[in-house]
Structures are given as C-alpha cells and as structure tokens.
Image 1 (cartoon, helix red, strand yellow):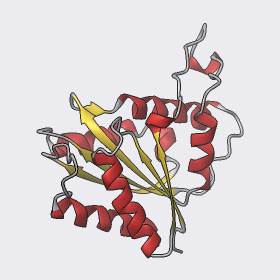
Image 2 (cartoon, one colour):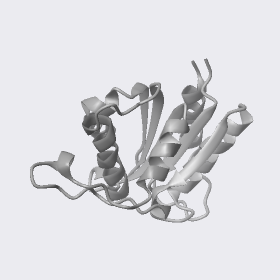
Image 3 (cartoon, one colour):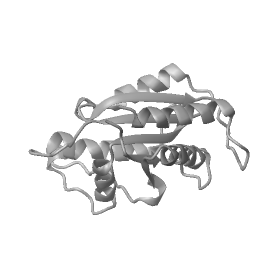
Image 4 (cartoon, helix red, strand yellow):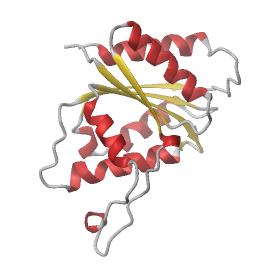
Amino acid sequence: MQSNNVLIITSSPTVGGNGDVIASIAANELTARGANASMLNLRNLDIQPIATGQDSVAHSDEPDDDFPQLLAAIHQADAIIVISPIYYNNLEARLITAIDRLYYPIALRNGYERGPKKRLGVILTCEGSSSDWLKLLVDRTLTKSLRASVADIKTEVFGHCPPLQGKPINADYWHRTISLADWCIQS
C-alpha cells in the first residue's frame, strides 16, 4: 500500500531557511509521485507546553492553542516528514514542545485512538554535530508511547548545512531529501 497523504512538519524559525527549502523539495517530489503533500511550519502555530498539575502532567489541563490542528493533521497523514535545525546538539524548541504534547493524548488519555502506524522520516540540519549522536537523539526522543504509532523511521542528518540564503541546496542533500520522500510513500 502506498502512502498517499504525507504531512511535512518543519520547525525552522526562518522564513525561506533550510527547513523551508528542504520541505519544498520533499513536497515537490511527493506531488510528482502522485502523493498529497501538506506542510505545517511550527513557527506559524501556537503550541504551548502543558503546565504540570498537582500530581503529574496527567492531571493538568491542556492549553487553548493550535495543538488540535497539529494533531488532526498528523491523524490525516499516512506518513510524516519532520525537518528540524539542531541547536546546541538538540532539536528545535518548538519541535520538542510538540513532541511533548503528542505524548499527552497518546499515553495518558484512556481510549485514545492512535490510528494506523505511520512511516516517519526525519531530516536534521546542523553545523558540526555528530550524525551518530543526532540519530541516537531522535531514537531516544521517541518515547515508547510515540514509537507505538510509528511503523518505521528513517533519519537523515545534513551536517555542515550553513544557511542557504538564496543559494541552491547541496546536491547530496537534495538527493537524500528526494530519497527520503520516496521512502515515505513506499509500502
């Protein structure tokens, strides 16, 4: 079965930055292959952390923000591509908040409907961070409850990826983006 609906989530804080360029390349490839590619940039969403309650986060109220929009888009997708810059050897803060919020309904709500498992492609852009370390970071970020919603994962690390500032993306990164997009829609 081919994945027809692919959600591309980028946490790039910069309009026209590396994440936006990579997301456009992936979306164009997916569209050319007959898939429906939709994009969400976390910089355009207000996703707040859950404040801890008296006993635990399980007793905390969810903020009134744009998280339901993100969750709905994730549910509608057959596969997901996440693109994030790396700052201080970690994922971008908005992405970390979104991942933390995903944990809440999946792990802590009785009767929560996950839906079918999805392929998850991850592209990280960075300067100087170790590729092995960043792949381990992605692996450890996917908690047991989140991993239960993932059929398969593929992570690409674009090391030494300086701001493009109107320059074309490195040919190797372009090919790897195309390959990851193709992988997301394969059965």
